[in-house]
Length: 423
Image (cartoon, rainbow, N blue to C red):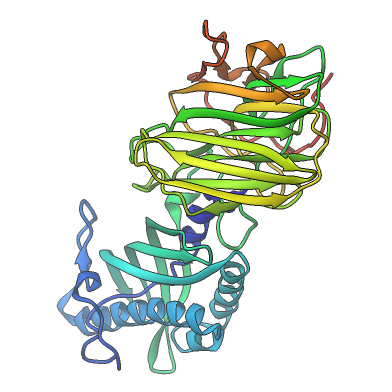
């Protein structure tokens, strides 16, 4: 998927925009800085490492970081990367140019630093380091607004009488033994078909039920969005319904995605995807615990109506898309999304997700999951250990759950194959 946005996209995008900046700007900058984002100490962060002789340097470092963040936001709004050049080294400027271009290419219309918290600031001659905890708000062209808080570790150099940012790292997004969440400099996560062979009901990124053996023109399902602890391990998962994808490379799908950064940021979004195009978020807000219903139905040849309903909040959304489908399968799936290059991303510890009211139109008749003869699919790791296991269908033939096992996830080398899984 997508995600994009993931963010899949979006979480990935927010992780990458910290070009960062902070401090006492009222003395130096030609514009006002909201008091809510000026030099707030991070909760639980180490104290600043400031000697009396370093106070002026410390203030200048905070100012250049704050100013650089403001300039990046202005550069996005004006689509003018040159606005960022005076606060960073030439090498870091080129990185920021690419990051901003990727953000714009992925539909970002504006970014805003909502809150800045300070960790340690240390000066050593003509070099310095600084840690910030930055909360960024990102607005997309379809009206979606997302927010994420991430740690930024800056390195700076004193060059030609001024401090400049040399690098900006995000350590919480690249922990040892785990794959970092996608960022703005790489394509957003995407859900990709990873079909299973007729003799094996397993997949490396799907768990749930899939029906074949007919012509499928509609699918619907309801589930509860998983709830995570913000300080839990990082990971990502997506729940969706779709048409196609089991025996072909076409797949129209829609659902929700949940992303945990492992650094205090948890993000939820609704999305639509039609392979081979990347997924796109839709302006339906979802939260942990919400009941969400998603339906996809073909209204005329290659014309699909995609409907979302947040049953908890009452918000609804729908769109019509043109898409040529094989109509070869229908799915109700909990997934480990794939990265921009096809590698399966680490599956979150989502616990158990409940699906209900699952139905499809097969050969012109509306039927339950059970009536289609759908197969249960277990998600397995690269060494074939079960990661997510579907329950048997309920007595109504329309409901089931998917349970996350306690098997740890490792990103398989060379993953991202598309096609059947087989010996």
